[in-house]
Amino acid sequence: MITNEAVIAALSQVEEPDLGKDLVTLNMIKDIAIDGKNVSFTVILTTPACPLKEMIEKACVNAIRLLVDKEAIVKVHMTSNVNSNRKDNKSILPGVRNIIMVASGKGGVGKSTVSVNLALGLAAEGAAVGLLDADIYGPSIPIMLGMRDERPKMTEIDGKGMIVPMERYGVKAMSIGLLIDEKQAVIWRGPMASSALKQFISDVYWGELDYLIIDLPPGTGDVHLTMVQTVPVTGVVIVSTPQAVAAADARKAIMMFKQPQINVPILGIVENMAYFTPQELPENKYYIFGKGGARKMAEQFELPFLGEIPIVQSIREGGDSGIPAVVDDEPVSKAAFTELAQSVARNVAMRNANIAPTSVVQMN
Image (cartoon, rainbow, N blue to C red; front, side):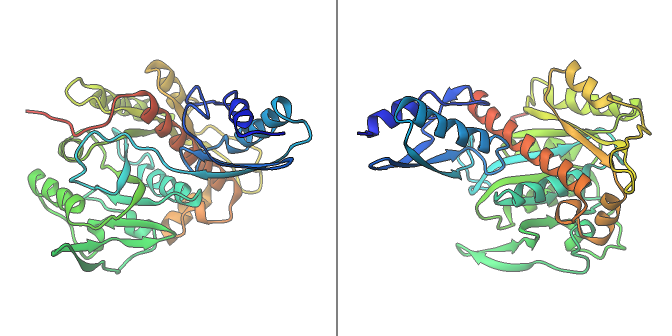
């Protein structure tokens, strides 16, 4: 007879590739049910965007048939529970499990494009996702999500008036661009911009989120310091292009987050505008801005390389029309951003399992 103990013993031989421990030790196996030769159980992944889910499922089936009963009929239910590793008392963003900042040392490298499509890519995999546009002076999220001229509503939570973020394509979004006319320039000194961002954290009702993506402005200034001193950041995604000029500025962003007094984990580097692929020649690659600059930088700093995003006309058109690449039908760009979302989710899970809990940065 197939026993519960035998099933657990077999599944204890199946390792989660990224975390380096078996599924039983990681408490990822639930609801084992046995009926003669029929065996069913649930595997709880650390993220719905896990790119290895099929491999893990196949390994579980093989383990039961090899170590328990070769005639077993195995049914594996794959689900997920996004892990978190927050050290703070959760007085700020209490329902948000992971806070991911997207940064670059330089403008014009496609950081907002990456932020939007990363958020949508994670949501497409089944995660609950929010997107905060922290670029006070040049907000672009409302245009890229097709929310021009729309305004968020207010609600009351525990007696306090809260802003309800706008929702598009399954992602909750907030931006200064949703509160002012898009033709109006924001002429504020640094402290005013920092104060506005703190309000977006404390006065917006984000609810329960697996990931909150924060699209930072270019540079290494007030906004960046405000964010790391206000919220416990899980990690940072660095965006660069292959150009030496862009890579040099991205290095400065990396060095800022690596400063001992800041020390925010860097989840990896993504190379945007890596190559040009004509729509009529999808197999061709033309390296207009050079080749492999961000990948070399990742190797230099011993950071994960999260992937390459090509120059595809539909990515630009989607950003302008409010229909981003991930929700479009163009296969090249959609595949690139889907792989990016999976890589980021994977690195968040590994970061939470292997690095000390995240907390708010304390600086004098």
